[in-house]
Length: 108
Image (cartoon, rainbow, N blue to C red; front, side, top):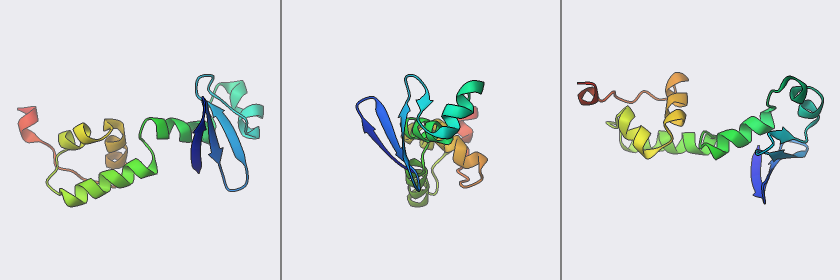
């Protein structure tokens, strides 16, 4: 999905259509949100994509973390957490896409 921002509205372009996401109101113009998700107070994939992007938990950030780890193979979890969003680092660890070293001195 391609995400752009115009004023307070995020434009999320999918394979066919573009939908408007308002993060303040937690709304989306997609039919799935309008007819189903809003009634059960859940987010659609477009709102989730915008939340991920604004929290630096998107594919671009994941790629940067992997590149950093490749260039710095001895980087610890704590170093990655200082350099990047900690939740994004945790996402990649839980998906087993990265395996950084634990900083033993930080736990002693």
